[in-house]
Structure formats: structure tokens, C-alpha cells
Length: 184
Ligand SMILES: [Zn+2]
Image (cartoon, rainbow, N blue to C red):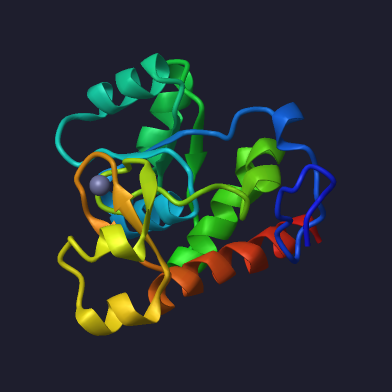
């Protein structure tokens, strides 16, 4: 399925023109939420994982880079708001419920973008470039995986390779279900 300009439409979400949308939110995530940070990156959100340094540094980066602070720590959340950060107190005990908690509080710009962004590197937050199989064959990829997929993705920062395997697809599917749930 494609629109008049040849762009592919993603099934399961109504099409809207992305160029008229506000920029997707960016996040800085405290040390307790590493697994959630990795999933946000796979969903395509620019997400810094802050695990070394104090709360003041985290808040300063959040303000300078206009990143929403994600934390489960009530005192850090309250302090962040007092010093002028945008922050979300993340509830939930699984990544699914945490992502729902974030989606519910991040505002329409996140809900609109959820499920429509290109994935980023789960390890370092770098952007991914697409590689065809012939180029990917020069990388360290198990032969069976190479034979099974046509497209591969390489992090432009740390060079980690990705392909659309079960883990990736599960997380992208999770995104679609969260997106639907957030709107109902
Ligand atoms: Zn990377």
C-alpha cells in the first residue's frame, strides 16, 4: 500500500503527513530504566541512557538538549520539575507498562510518532543505515541469518549490525499495540 507520492503506508495506523507533525520527543533516562531505554531506541526515539553522574548533571543535559527526563524516582522527578525540566514519573513494573505510562504522559507528539519512526541502535542510540545482503556479507553475521534476510541495518556510530529478527519484530509489534491502546 502506498500513497500518491509512492511512500509506503504502515498497516494498522491511519496515515498522516509526517512533515506537518511536531518533532518527536527526545528522552534522557535514569539508571534504573536501562531496558526501557533500549526499547525506546528500537521504537525510534532519541534516548540517552544516563547511568554515570549525579542528578544535577542529568537535569542539566535534559535542559540543554531539551530531553524529557524519564525516572521512577519520585524525588528526582519532583526536583527536575522545580528546576525547570520537563519530566515524566514512569510507573509500571514491566517494559510494556512503563512504555504505556510514558506514552500516556508524553503528549500527542509521542503518540503520533509511535510506530512510525525508524529504529535507532539499542546499544548506543546511533542512527541506523540500511545495508543490502551483499554489503552485509562483509560483516560478522551468521550465515543462516544472512541467507534468511534481504535487508540489514548498521549503526552509524558503533557499527553494531541488526536485522529484522524475532526480537526486533516483537518490539515493533509492541509499539503498534501500545499506539492503539494509547488512543482508546
Ligand atoms: Zn550503536
